[in-house]
Amino acid sequence: MAGIELPDWMRATALIGFDDPDYRAITVDEHGQLNVLLRGAYNDEIRTVTLDDEGRISAFVIDSVDAWGRMLSIGNAEMAARLGSIVTFDRRGHVIFLQDFEQGLLHLGVATSGDGAAVELDPTVAKSGSYAAKLVAGKDDNHFAQLQRYEPIPLDARIGIEFSFSRCKADTYLELNSHFITPTGTTDAIIRYYPGTTTMQYYGSDFRWHNIDEALDLYDHDHYFHTVKLVADYDTSYYSWLRVDNMFYPLSEHELAHTAIPTGLAHYVTLTFFDTADANPYIYVDDIIITNAEP
Image (cartoon, rainbow, N blue to C red; front, side, top):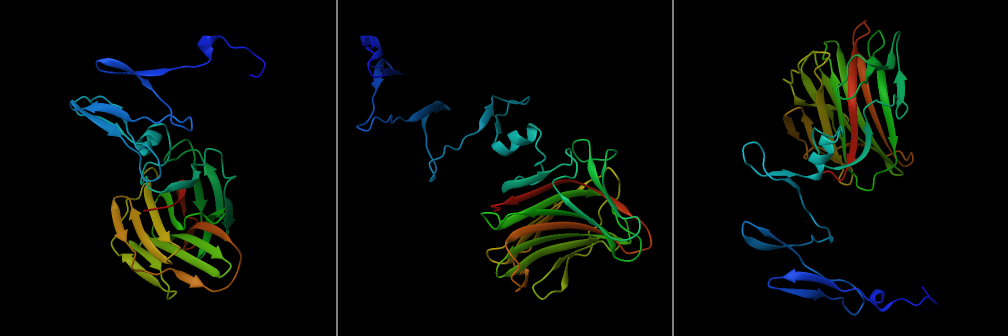
């Protein structure tokens, strides 16, 4: 404010704080920076609020008590869920993509094979919101309907893929494939589920299928959505873990499949529903979530 004469009372401002029984001035250092301690009373004890090793304050939004007199703590993940996020199942990792089909199918690619195959938006069944994707597999053996998502390579290569689906019919299977494509080749984390044989499998570094669970009998109903989350570590080229509803499967001893054919740089996810009989079976898919920096 050069050239403007300020009154005396505007040339300096003093910050003061109450330190029983007196008021004290809050000062700045030689660089003009304000250095203070944040402190508060907890159970009749004065505690100092500190920073973590990255200079961040970790805190909770606190409601005083619930109906039973217990203190409530609401962290960031719980707050987001209460405000309408679809990230309500496994809340770990950093979200890099969300799809709840409220804006249609424009964020995803689709592919179909076989007579009558289709991928379409359906307003009659949904896990959240008002829509789900309906995948109709084509007639004849191994015809399919597929959802696709292309992403740049994430900054952290410990990646999670989550989705929910309903209907578990015999003579079908569902396959999730997470392709990690680099100039040195493609590394794949792949699982598939056969409702008819209640079998969940993963695809290994020997390019063969291996059983994870041979008794995974999921309830079959249009409105009963099962949630699946697969995590793989592409830095080490090993699976990490799999969760299906409340069931947890550690997979960290199993190596991912790798094909040494240079093809580019991308993360490519497909979710494919197959028919193994001469019919047009269908499933509903909702709430697709891609994360990285998974624990």
